[in-house]
Image (cartoon, rainbow, N blue to C red; front, side, top):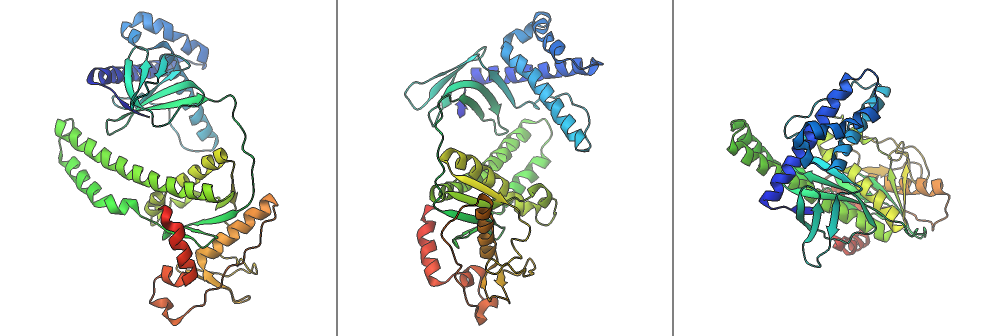
Amino acid sequence: FRLYPSNKEEIKLLKTLDLCRQTYNFLLQELNDQKVIDKSQIQGIIPDLKICEPRFNKLYSKTMQYECYRLFSNLRTLSKLKEKRNKVGRLRFKGKNWFKSFTYNQSGFKFIETGKRFQTLKLSKIGEIKIRAHRNLNGKVKQITIKKEQSGKWFAIIITEENNKTENKLNIDQAVGIDLGLINIIHDSDNKVIQNPRHLNKHEQKLKHLQRILSKKKKGSKNRNKIRIKLSKQHEKITSIRNDFIHQISNYYIKKYDIIAVEDLQIKNMVKNRYLSKSISDASWNKLRQFLTYKAENAGKLLVTVNPHGTTQRCNNCKTKVKKNLWNRIHNCDKCGLIIPRDYNSALEIKDMAIKSIRQELPEFKPVEIPLTAELNNRSTSQVLMNQETQKRLTTDAQWL
């Protein structure tokens, strides 16, 4: 939720953020001095730290204890990376402006509902801050994290605990397979196509312009900080537009289908391709899968991931392997004569694999054959891939956009 602190409250937030940074660095120094790591000993230093350093009395005790948890959480992450044989170094001390968040765990906060547009969030050692809670809080509030973005905006991340959560029963009526791409971000098994909006390309020129201005400003100057904030707001705008688009897509599929099948893509490995990494990152395949996952769980729907190996090359009708290069956008099977879009065939195959994996019988679905014409080389892919009836149905279904 967005926070709207006054100037005095923002000064207190910034001081709290800096004191948390100093606490983290002090505990890290104690950790480096230890020959045998002892978490309880390091955590026991916190009360003595308040006595020796009076400035830490302005910091809530639970907030200081959470920095100890953060330190050992980072240490566990490094050890897991070492187990996977990744090259990692030691934990580093945090410099000025490196800390972006601090946490109130279990106590030290109070959420006050005013019945107006802005509610009130009361934080110990800081005071009451206006908060824009655009939805109701369900359950008991267990933890609040205060975060500062690069653009200067403040947010509160609230974790609640729900005791009596009703379990949604899974009703399997309709299933869909989704094939992710770069030309069309989605082509599903119902032959619905959603084109890739390419959000980054639309705003790339402004980003480059602001980056050039920033590079010419003197480091540490006020003018450089002003341009830095403008650049951060532009990045934040692109992220918000992208998230809004993915929310619309995920809501559409969650409301319409009971089973949603996607490929289990290794996106981290795919991004290593220096020719496609920028486009793959802009398409946000991983974020789309995350949104579908948590929304399906809340709505009582089922998200199934299938092995992507062979979904593009295998014919959905006769299961024959039809080799295709990346630029071949039409699936043309010589054995059964099926001629449909390449992504449409993949989506149908993903759907069939998902149905087999959950062992459920659903109504049979046969793809409609689309004859090729001599105009294939001159017309765009979207014009050739759909017949008139499909285009009418897509016009109706696309109104949600």
